[in-house]
Image (cartoon, rainbow, N blue to C red; front, side, top):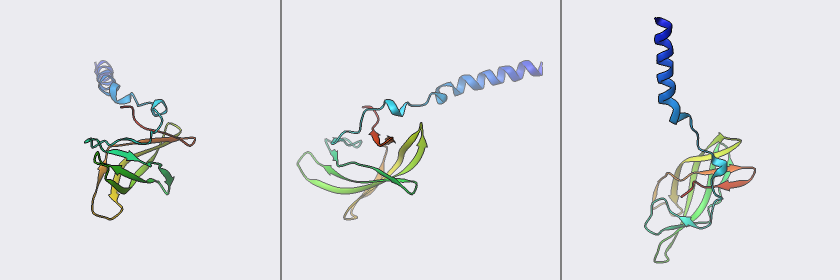
Length: 121
């Protein structure tokens, strides 16, 4: 009886974990484009994004260009997490060059063998 219950519990646990076990294939993501639309929307385009990995972080300078042509210079920093034979830049934080604005971003970049990829649209 105990063995049957343990098997049933294990099966239920595996079924519940099934979707969580399916990992994204970062290597199948498209190449990082320049420019690309901001995750914040509003027609803002992000340019010059070129993350470099050092000291457990991914860092990049970038521009945010508004639909009216105004350009804002910023910096972003991400956690550099080893994943699938490369580095996943995740948990991003950004700050304007002049210090007037800052925030977080859901955007991620995957870097493997020098190739930089972004999540699919």
